Length: 163
Image (cartoon, rainbow, N blue to C red; front, side):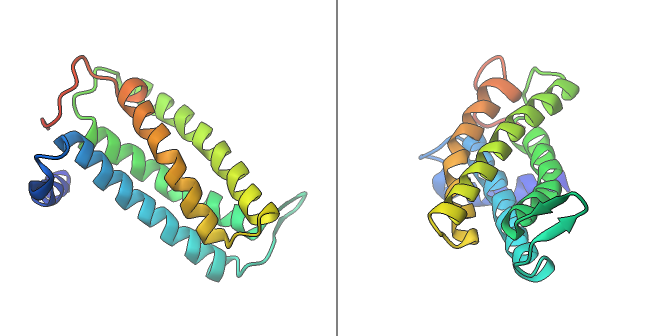
């Protein structure tokens, strides 16, 4: 599966090879694919699973956009880590368990940012929840890239193309 993903991404990289490094393209492809999956899952959970209704869990109640976000997150978190570790940042000098912990910390910062920003956009500015999710995700991408590159999956040098 890993070789198939490398082959697929590297095939589409060819027209962009003079514009951006391979590692950055792999990050964009993996992150973009995982982001698209996240947005798709959010849409499905919001509209069809939670049916735009408040989710009651005993003492807790979640707005449908918050429940959809958290549910989609539970699926895309492990996928994102595995893609980052085995496709994008393959030359990391950081041990796997440390990578996972750091990835978790960065994702938790992004999760807090996402929940607060989606809540702000939906409940105070009355954006449609899927649009609010797209805007929030776009803003957090730069933070995620820089955090991954310089903290979570740090490398000795900054190679741009090796597997």
